[in-house]
Length: 308
Image (cartoon, rainbow, N blue to C red):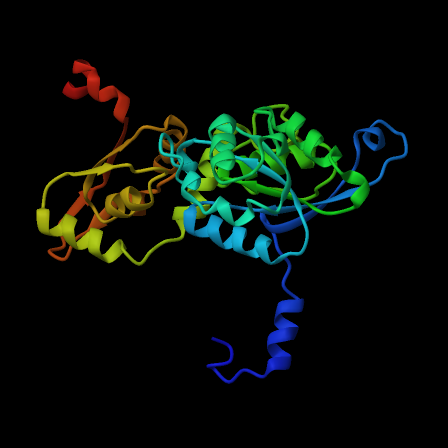
């Protein structure tokens, strides 16, 4: 694209050289050994974090690794939480065969570590080179210790929530500095912010990062709500990207989601709407107070919840 726009090659190189990877996207971390963390001498090893959110992204990561010379030490962390695709684990569809003859050791971790190991086995990696350790802390230590004397980098391939957990672990161990900003959430009394975000905060953070800034579809939702003229049911509302916009436009909205943490964040945002947000004027100049009710979809089985 830069070439098509006639951008000078020197400018392209300068831009790339000044780019700093962050937040799990080709992030590089110097790992200390277990001995080093206990106060003894120990050699550091480089960890390169390559986020894999879906099969397409995973395939690009695998193709990149296939271009790197030699054998690789890999730490795959596969979770199946909502942000990862709960119940469908789409990253198993990636082309792991690309690394069949290039994996020196493949450590599998996360809530679906066993399934990942099975996929790696059928991709052609020798079972003697596959290690299954669901606990992330122990998996990281084991993967980093393997072949550490070679000083070759360890590549971590985590899904989204696994990447958040891995970064939190690295921060706690003092191997990664940085903070994660959690919007619309206050820390619990006495909570040490250096310990990293809670699991509830992580759920809100990933949702806002992935969905919160998307605005292209908003005119369509507003037009559909206006055309329907009645109350709106937002299924899979999350933290309220669409629900809040519709409520501010004067529509009565019921927001439904299976994740209580996201609904709690949405409830906080509803409470923070001021009078100008809650009272909107339509084109006909008749004011309507915005109404928004958050309901967890698990309540759908409760007759009392349906009557509410």
